[in-house]
Length: 120
Image (cartoon, rainbow, N blue to C red; front, side):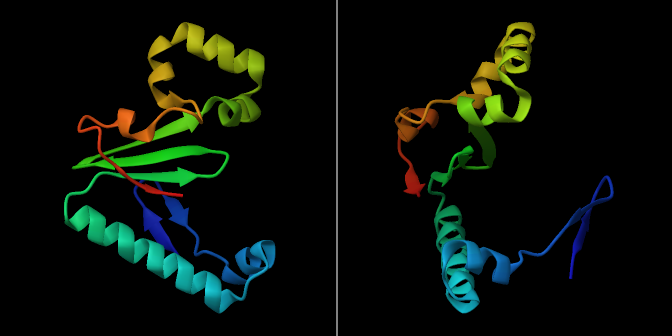
């Protein structure tokens, strides 16, 4: 099954066998981990907790109340666009720096409440 979103973008299902092979686990174990994480995030959101979901080598997804934002690691953006292109973009649009975070930034500092549950 796949889902269609506005703008004709299609969401493909997660390929559990491929993920399992990459992390040397069974598909059943990978599915269980994913379901557990989704369930825990759902409970936290339902309780109004602030969440920071760390996406390895990419950045941090922050959910604070009804506000959802993605902060990217500089190194990740640099790999995507190249160092020169990224520097040009940041120079032309300085507010893009609001979307960049350091790996050593305390995650609680990214929320207005200064309190966050971190999902590694």
